[in-house]
Length: 271
Image 1 (cartoon, rainbow, N blue to C red):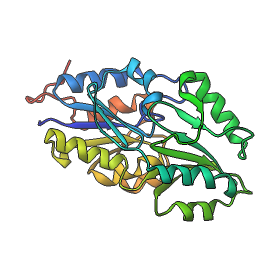
Image 2: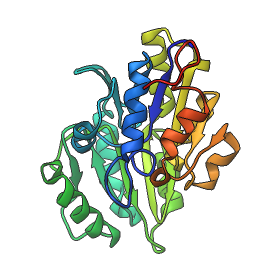
Image 3: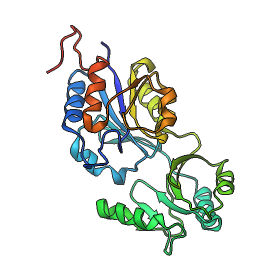
Image 4: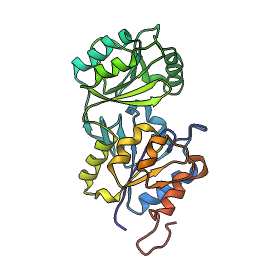
């Protein structure tokens, strides 16, 4: 078996939303895969500032952050991109005019506009992130550049027209519950995968992606080996080549075993 490249989403795929931990079975499966010479990468919408807990839990070959806006291999950033200054200013200037509240995401921090927030959900979002990543939450100041952003809308928001306004600048991903993730055109989890495959000379058919939610759609469309977690968004089902068990039911390890990723060249199971 040749070298494989494994790409893992974080929340709901690798990190349990129930326990906020990575199951031991998943940690062991990734360790075994890397021992066999395969490569493992986080491929997340999270920015670098939100990945400290993951880095402390599991060793990876790299971290693909912000939906393809930053690629870290080992301890070196091999690619990064920020939104243009005029696009950043455009988002900040127009969001509240359309009744939506943005969270502006950069490598070093997540920036919130000065309260009061126009979308009530943001109070909970702010407090949740601050409790887990206190150094990553900051108030936005004029001129700050960011890589991507999310926004939250309510029934009274003019969401449709705001999305239309953004269409020439970003791809908007509906995450459900009034949350929308916005990624600069030309960037996605899929572009991150292609860059890594090219960097290491790994064939597309040797790429495996693990995901559960709508912001994983681009990587599910990009490669042939797509592992869908037991608990998942229905939009991914048409693109799944393998549906595994829930994360907490050893879904990562089960998929890797069933797909032969943990077998040695002679067919023996890696210890």
